[in-house]
Length: 521
Picture 1: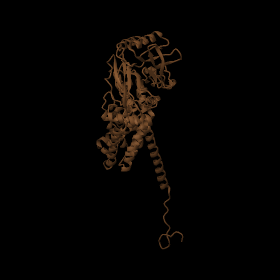
Picture 2: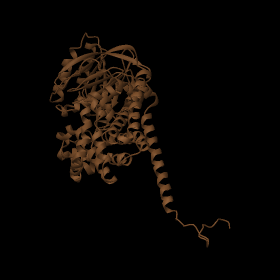
Picture 3: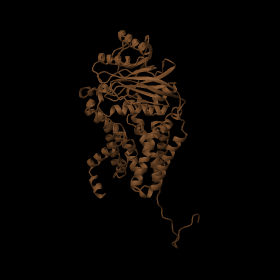
Picture 4: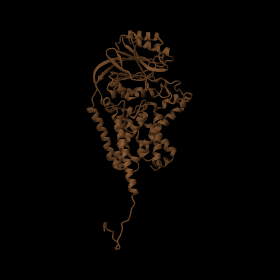
């Protein structure tokens, strides 16, 4: 132990150790998908933070750990953004600097039982504060939230229906804090064990008492995934070919992936007619995604467009939340140089103004989202409150084909389905395409990155309202309240200590006989 402490005495070694420790949670996400390691992955980082020699060093260790986490989570961006990936990781990693200071404040040295109990509430709240800030679309959105790693665990999906992915993140951090205390602070094992028991009890209660989506129907939806094809004309032809194979299969809706049509359909009536012919031949509406400069207004939009037997139905959703650097460059006048070192957007895409619920045949209502919009739980929650039957995500991760990105993206739909109690279809150009039922369970098989196919899914429908849809982000609100109460308590405590230190210590007056004088005499 002394040898390790001596080795960590070097600031650079300590920083490297913090970055490596911060990267460990990524193993819980696809592609490794070791979801169970999320319950332990933060422990090395926590142990390092609590032993920091100063609060300032703990903040640095928090920053370096956050850098390691963000870089590992987004390493697949390197071929596109090159050195800019490190800059983004450093920027986002800084959000964990206050959390690192907070860990040392509550767990450093030999913490009392009370301090450990407070840590079990405050440290997960601090982590949620970080996730809340980085969930802002301008900072890249909520990709890689710790709770998203539990997309395969049925008990966790049940918890997501109660408090969303936020509740999963909170409980995972609480478990890691409890384990770190069990490892490092023997005298405080009682509250650590109590924290683990409380987490297990919460999970069990959610499993037993949270409402299950009541299946009350079924819909047949087909996903068309053309695979890696160069050029919009060749891609359209392949999608057309695959779609014709669906004739006679009694599907209710056919979904193409993001950027599946590279031309504005108002400007290309020939393509609109071909899509209308496909709809008549298959007996189903087709939801395509147009990535093109519009003829009716300036700028390039990414739009989900519904096609019926007579062509354009008029149902259209324009993507609202764009990918930083991929679809627009924040503060282009300052950061426009990113286009010269990577594959950043040469021209900013335009944003849509509102979500859209589309009416498909047989009273089926669907809510489309485009690309990384499926990472935002508030968007699917809003669509569910608007009455959708099926959530649909249209995506394209072809730029990151042989990386962890396609699997990570496909897994997010499981969380959105579990949170809302609505099935979700994740349709892509090049894989991974996936479908999940109203409880977040997988429906059918994935279409991997090597597939070029059209696949039909029999999807169970469910209605009713989950606690998360009804009550929203109550976990976040509770976490912010916990942080606020702790901060107020710290301020009050500091003021009392300063007043106590400022009071002059006046020795008592003595009489001529050497005894203290009595007041009033």
